[in-house]
Image (cartoon, rainbow, N blue to C red; front, side, top):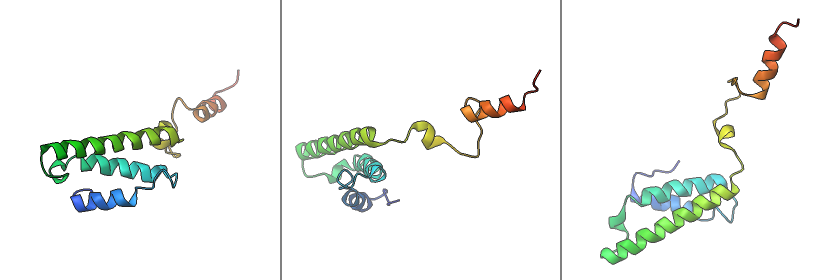
Length: 107
C-alpha cells in the first residue's frame, strides 16, 4: 500500500493508478479512490488563489465519483464474498443448513 500520509505519496499513487480502467483492474481503481479521497485533504496544494483551489477540488471530486462508479460497475465480488472467511460457518448459510440437517436424529 502506498504512503497516503504525504502529498508526494498521494501523487505517486494517483500516477500509479491512472490506468485502472484501461487495465480493467478493480484493485487499482480502489487504490485510486483512496488516494483521491486523501488528495481532498490537501486543498491548499491544489493551486494559487481561491478560485483555482475550488476548481481543482471539484476536478478531484469528479474523478472520485468516476472511479467509484467504475468500481460499482466492474467489481463482481459481493460484500458477502469480501467478508467471507472459509473457516467460519454461518448459521444462515446453505452449507451450515446441510450440516445441521445431517446432524439431526432421524425419526
